[in-house]
Length: 384
Image (cartoon, rainbow, N blue to C red):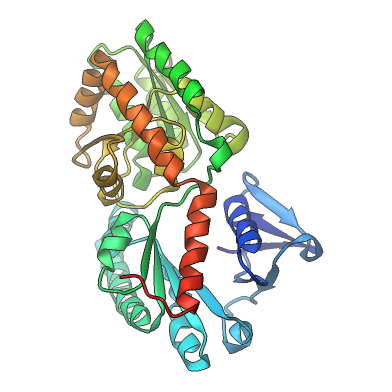
């Protein structure tokens, strides 16, 4: 995660900053971040600007093309490094040399990386070269894991993929705090609206890009309309498919059913609207990215219908909070939504399950578990 230098101030991604602040509150000692410098300003949406004097942690900004070295971790008790970042795979060996504990954090599995290349790269020669690069990096990643002291896995796919690595922790990324999770009365008020036979309220939030299946959303809307389903689909977010989606909506006369709501504030607008105005969340992610969208949606008591990739499937294996179909099978998604509209009691049941699962994985609890894992690693305890 890069940081942007703006004069004397530093600009951070909001989600990253909030997480580090919570670390400083829970960790029994000082916290330092070693971060790359962004070549350009961060997107204005979701950015925190702070001066070093006002931050509760120390931030070391690397120079261009600089990587973390011995001088950056010399005083550390334990180092957390990103195994998704190719320029941090040397950290485990460095820590081993210096007698410092090292825990990696991992999200993507090889399958997901190859899926992203397939979606984004159409030139066969370029795709082959990128896949070779991914294969070589995965070999380095596995060697780094053999030297580290623990692994924190965001999502079920990574937890399963690297099951041979000892001392693993499974967690689900989320920005929803305990106090923001939908309450029982709030949930029952929304579920009561399911009985009035008004159009089914569907939603999606996230980046409007191919890997998130954004283009499939509007195609799904066409299928639902042909099935004579009365519905409203609200799409939150921006991305490189946005204009194409708007043209598709206009071309297919979907203006009465699909609303492009753009980028909205996560805490002030998105969460309240999901909790109050959404019956079903549609997740057509075409790969196994462990998106925080899953847990954040469930925390609003909204069940999910969509492609059963390994990330969503891993959640469904743990909790009855939605419906998954084979990836890219839009017809199956459409018929599933139509069936649920005719049997809305099933939506209500899984909405309650979703809220219950969200309460077990709120922002504070997730970070407490991650801190506990780090402390046990320092003390020489290893999870089976």
